[in-house]
Image (cartoon, rainbow, N blue to C red; front, side):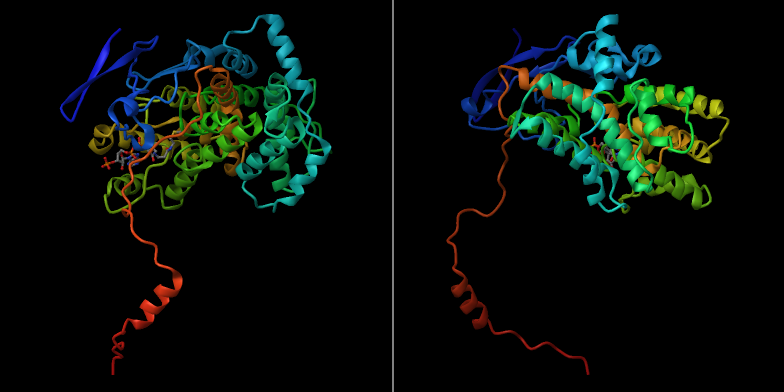
Length: 440
Ligand code: ACO
């Protein structure tokens, strides 16, 4: 076995080196503190492996993404989202019977408890749907767990996958003041979601095939992405043995932030702002480069991808195809393409390896499908759900797993005596203040 050497204060230490199935190399520092007394400091965890995993492989330099060994391009070309859910959660592609049984269960568990409908009325209609989603998913614990313990993990996994699409669609209907449309057992996962979103009681609604295909693709491309911010949150919360619903709810909150899944909403808002500003995208590229400005090109850059994001490549093509098939145009697509072209030629972006990420083109697709901007991150959560669940389950089933508990380097004040309030008051009143100069 390979070893890595570390020299500290004149003493040498050796640590085992772990090589992954795709030849990634990790130095196992599990014993670092016990042997050297030091800890590894890595804010943002850019160099820290928090676990070993068999779910997803990413090579950021080469733009590779694989779920359980299958390349994302091949999965995206012909799989259904239900199949991908099965693959991620159970580790292998389903047989025909397994998929039928799984899809059947996803259909038959899609209703939420009638009492939960009242919860939606408790939120203001203007509440952000990510807030509603997080709260509603946490609320599922009230129905399907005993305190912190899952009554039946496998069944709860199905329930969660099945019910989140209903919760997501209901939160949209509530925000626009329309009656809820109940799930239908004769529709596929993706058709059912679109039906609950867009059907109204007075009119028949048939899900357009192009929308169904686009949603299937979007959900698949978001299904897992190894140890990103929200997934690490799910695993961390799960490491304390919190139940499935509580753990996933915390992942939804982590995803909401604009530096993570919330970027898809921000991308469209940015493109709209550029359009309203006369379409001068160069101005925004310059702003993003200006060290005095904190403006960033939303949808650009990635902690892991340093060449291209394979999901963005697939989505860019799909966005153009879907728009053509729907017979619509979107001026934002042109602005997006121009922004991408300029940014990819500009040394600032080239040197920092800033490429369009998955969020850059997903918003254009959601818009074309009639999904409102505020719902974009909810769509991301719907897609990411099987990945979160698979990662939560892997952490929970790992016999070597421990509660996640990072350490820190303390840079605050050293030990000093506490001064009681009375003494501080006396000291303050004894301080003679200079009279303020009042200008004549
Ligand atoms: N626009 C302009 N400059 C950028 C951008 C951007 N979008 N992203 C990074 N940079 C610059 C930084 O200012 C920094 O420059 P410096 O070295 O001169 O200081 C350099 O590139 C490195 O940036 P970091 O913030 O250190 O990179 P990090 O890996 O920590 O951040 C992140 C990655 C958060 C995705 C970042 O690129 C970003 O904020 N992008 C915009 C938000 C976004 O699209 N998020 C979605 C990510 S994908 C996802 O979560 C699904």
